[in-house]
Length: 636
Ligand code: BF8
Ligand code: SF4
Image (cartoon, rainbow, N blue to C red):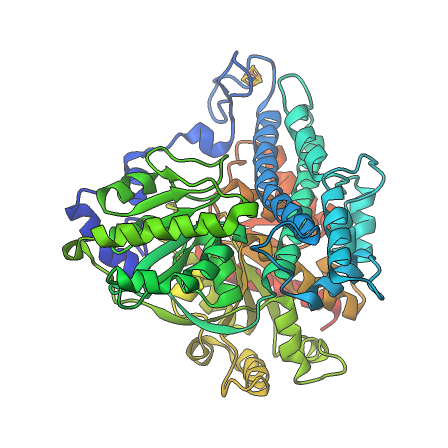
C-alpha cells in the first residue's frame, strides 16, 4: 500500500478521474495541497487560547519551552486535547438533547410526525432508569423518561451522577469512576467546566486537566447513551435487515436523495414522506420513484433501522455528488464537508441545510422544526424532484459497485439471536464460546476516515487479521460504513475470513436465526452515538461473569480517527476500562507527560488505555496480545 494511495474503496477510486476531468477538487487534492502540515499542531504544542499568542513550544531544539504566559508543553497539550473532548461531548449530547426534547413533546401530544414506535424498548428503558411502568399510560412513561434524560443536562447536585451513566455501567465501574472524581453530574456543566478551566491562567496541571477531560468524555458517553435509546423508542430498535452499500445504490431512473449528517429526527420523516411522494417523482419522469440513500451517521441510523442503503462514509461524501446522479443532498449536523456546497454547485444537485445552527455558504436552507417536520420534509422532497428535472443524463456516472450488507445488530438483536440457542440464558452461548476460546475476544471498530491513511484500508486489514484469529467484530460509524462497502457484512465474508472457532459460533447463531448460514463477519451496531450499544453488550457480559469491564477480552479500535467526537469516544472507552487503539497519530505527542497519562497511567487508574499504532497489521497483532493478556487475567 503506497502512501500515495487515496482510497481502497473501488467506487470512490472509479470517480477520481471523473472529478479530475470535471475540474472538481476533492478532499485528497486538498490534503496534498496542505503538505507539509504544521509539525507543532501535529504534536499539540501550539496554543491559541489567548491573544498574546499564538505560542508554540519547540519540542526538539533550543526554541521556547514555555508560552508567553508560562504554560509549558504539557499544559498546552492537555488543554488542547480536553477542549477537543468538550467539543465532541457537545456534539453528541446536543444530538441527545434534541431527541430528548422531541420525546418530551411527543409525550405531551405535540408532534404529529412522530410516535412511540417501540413500546417494548420504552418499558425496558424505564426499567433501567428506575421509572415505574405498572398500570401507567405509555405517554406518561415516555414523559418521565424524557424528564429524567433532560435532568442529565440540568442537575446541579455534584454528588448525584448523571442518570444514564449510572443506569448503564457496572457497579464496580461506577465505584471506580466516583473514587477518581470523574463521574459527570450534568453534561452541560461538565462541558462548560472544561472550557472554563482551560482559559488563559487557569488549570495548569496536566493530570488534573486530563481527569477533567475524562469527566467530559463520560458526559459524552451519557449524552450518546440517551441519544441511542431514545431514538430507538421513537424510531424503532434496529433488527437484522439486508441492504446494500456503496455508490452503486444510486439509481439512474430515480430521484436520488442523500441524507447526510447525524440526527435521525429529520431523516426519519424524509423516509416516511418519500413513500407518499413516490408518485410525484414518477410523474416527473423518475421511473423508479424516490431513492433515499445515506451518508455518514445519518446514513447509519436509517440503514440499521430501515435498511436504507448507504452510499458513502465520511471520506467519499464528495464522490456521492460527483456521480452527477444526486438530486438533493440533505444535511443536518456534523461531518459535512463544506466542500460539498461547491461540488453540488457544479451539478444540478440541491444541497439543503436544515439546522439553523449548521448552515453552509451556497446551500439552500430549509429550517427544520419537529412541529412542522412533515411539511419540511415535503418541501425538501419537492426541491429534489424539481432538481431531478434539471439533471443532465450525460454527466451521470454511477459506478457499478455495491455490496450486500446485513446490518442492524442492536444489543437487543444480538441477545434475541443468542436466545435462539438458549432461551433461558441468552448470554450463555456467547460466554461459553469466549471461555472455550472459539471466540478469543471481542473488538469494537469505531470512528472515522482520515486522509492520513488510504480510505477504509486500516479497517479492512485489521478486521481480516482479527477475524482469522477468532475475534468477534462489532462496528459503528464510518468504520461500519467501511465494512459495509467492502463486503465484510456478508455471510460470504464470514466463510472467507473467520477462523474456525468464530465461524462455528457465527454459523450456529445464523442457522438458529434461519439465515441458512452464518451471521455476517462484522456486526453493524449503528452510528457513532450507537457505540453505547457495544457498551451495553460488554456490561451484560461483565455482569454475567461477575467482573468489571477492564477484565474482559475486549478492545476498541478507531484506526482512521479524525473528529473531536472520536477523541471523546476514545477517552470514555479508556475510562470504561477498554484498551483502545488509535491508527492515526493523536495530537498529544508534544507532551511526554500527557502521552504517558493516556497510554500508561490510565492503565493503572482505569484498566483502559490508548494504544497507538499506525500500521494496521501491527495494530491487529498488538490487539491480539492485549486480548490474550486479558484472557490470562480471567484464567481462561
Ligand atoms: O459520528 S465516524 S467521520 S460521520 S465522527 Fe463523522 Fe467520524 Fe464518520 Fe459519524 Ni463519527
Ligand atoms: Fe500563549 Fe499562554 Fe496565551 Fe496560550 S494562553 S496563547 S501559551 S500566552
